[in-house]
Length: 240
Image (cartoon, helix red, strand yellow):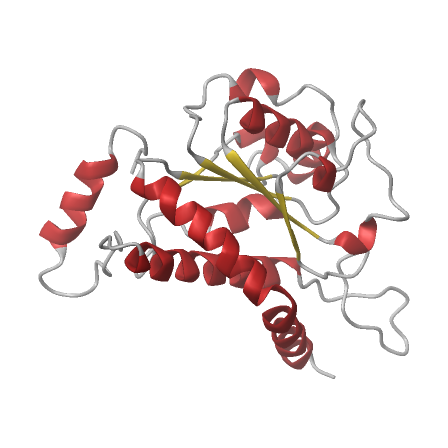
């Protein structure tokens, strides 16, 4: 089976297995947005790329704010990012500078769910009163214990767990003559699940009688004033 077919099959399975859960989560998020909360999204390494995906996005929900902690992202060194993610307490001084409030939503993306930085982020956000969601692969849960000093994995410190169903090792294919499994799916699946959730949030926001704040593509004519008004509305919480 090709990579694209494997991705499509997993997305079909996730539609069946997570559709109702994401709809329920979307309703909670919509009410928080109505009460002036915003959505923070955090991940390390390649998960940080998923966290950036819905930010300032044409056709996307406006009040979405990625948490940029640059030493945990790829552009300052992928090897260093991986080491820092595994270092207990590394993230705390960075989180103290973030504007996370009671009533906000905080999404943590971590395929393995075992490293200290994502776990510390989730714990900190819950202490601040945010609604904390973990997006991870539960395939790791039984055989890959936490690296956090508490001994807890990510799924144990969040309020909602969205299981990406990515298999351990984040590979999808094997082939004769290739000694290792290959072809990671976590970025494709994570981005799709996140956008599916946010699409459901838009519909839930509509269902409670609110007009969903959605960016229009800057490549269309006559959209500047629409987008500028939305930037102005959220500028105190999100740096666009």
